[in-house]
Figure 1: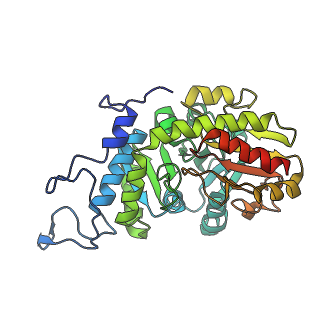
Figure 2: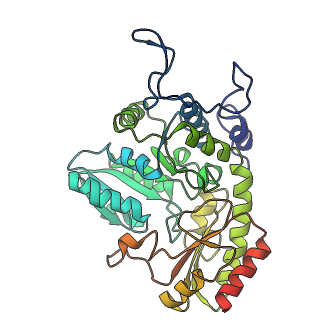
Figure 3: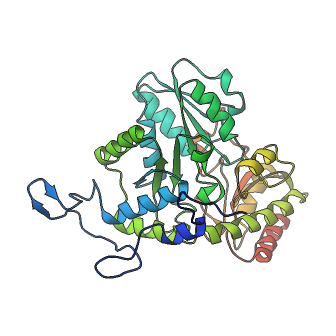
Amino acid sequence: MTDQFDRQGLGFETNAVHGGGPADAVTGAVNTPVYLSSTFQQDAVGQPRGYEYARSGNPSRASLERHLALLEGADFGFAFASGLAAEDAILRLLDPGDHLVMPTDSYGGTYRLATEIHRRAGLEVDAADLSDLAAVLRPATRMVWIETPTNPLLDIVDIAALATRAHAHGALVVVDNTFATPYLQNPLALGADVVVHSTTKYLGGHSDVVGGLVALNDPEVAARIAFLQNATGAVPGPFDCYLVQRGAKTLALRMERHCANARAVADYLDSSPSVTATYYPGLVTHPGHAVAVRQMRGFGGIVSFVHAGGETGALAMVARTRLFTLAESLGAVESLIEHPGRMTHAVLTGGPLAVDPGLIRLSVGIENVDDLLADLEAALRD
């Protein structure tokens, strides 16, 4: 992997460590303090010292927002209480009657938010194969939503090509960059308008905080997101901001190990007779491999596969692993295993976007790779 340089010429790893700002001016603390205050003294009526009320702004949150915006190469960053809260703010940019296009393979919570909440408010929503975007664009299409890699099948979308087509139609392009992280992929540099993250995942990295982020460059859209952040109030607390910022400092190191371990796991599963399909963009057999090579600096830490025993075999296997913890979520230092059809994507069961009942998703952690492979081998064999 190569270093990614920001506008000031510093490497990604340097910005990850120092991007939150200089040492505290009063105490010299090298970490941004956790400002546990809901309100701030004003010098006179209407003359705040920079902050008024913690829903509108808090120094801990401001530091995190600057930090993560820098890592994404964005001019503006907005932290939210969860990834779905961040997505909700983005969808509120649309008006009743507007049309949203999203991928057929996507996080179940995103699909639920769009179809069961925003559709009820007048938004028109279509899930479609984004490789044929022209077939689903309408006069009212105002936003194209991209996941790449997708969740849980790890499809790859050509961000630059899709952004060109969407922009020609007058639509905003939103990229969920949670799986790739800014260390591996920078959608804004590829033509996207808005980037969204669940900071719960790789940016936080330790399964101890829930959060979200919106990053972008357009000042007019940024002003609308800022208004929505304040008006709806779905903001993270200062300690949550501290935890995400602490995690972001080691993102580059962690992603290197996630990628290396995931590649070894994918190679093993791809050769196993107990597996009928392995999904990982680092495999040369993956249909999106060439695009992934072009727009990513690594292939990520998520691997999905279909158990040869179908749903019965998959459910038995996820109950047998010792190091891979059976749990939802992903992107933390520990390895996780889940059954999407019964867990994260259960909302899609019975519908046209339902996942294969034999599918298993792995979030490959940073443990010793030989231990992880032995755990999977034993679980597949028993």
